[in-house]
View 1 (spheres, rainbow, N blue to C red):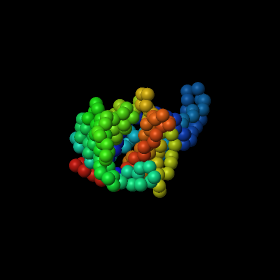
View 2: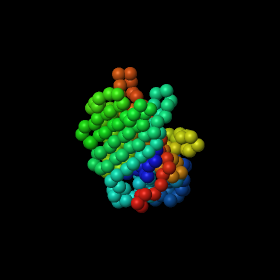
View 3: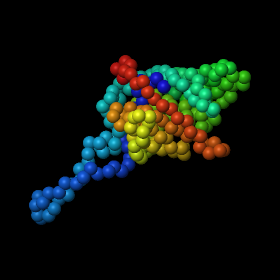
View 4: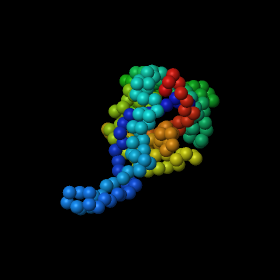
Length: 220
């Protein structure tokens, strides 16, 4: 997907590994041994990757100026077939996604309260709870300065490879919703992938969104 920047201003919650310990003899008033834990720069980045991503890249003030977003890319549906897709977003809470299918357009629209779906050959119908949740989550990624509190907690789980890029896996939790998996590039801190889940009678249904082609737009 073409996207300018997807950031979150949140502090991670989770444990980190210690880079080592330093020991000093005779520095305490009692003459005892002082042991200090030392955290490496890599461990510090691992712990605060989401917060650093906002603090050091463009800042909250610049993000708050962004009111519209257009994302273009490919969507892979059942059977592995790919189709062109575009998502148009505008604050507050307006989001429309158009998928170009062989027999016409599939359109999904959400206004922050209700949503509608149309597919070729069928009448328009209202979004279900899972679809509306997916739209809210997509809006949070597009406009992070306005959606800081969408996740109750964020926890760094491990490192993973996304293609040739090394990433940190961060798992976000929300009230009564399935967890969201966020993959941040270890070098740049940019969001590479988001995996969200929707509950269904057959279990949790995953949707994966890959981000790339980051570029500066209007100072962001």
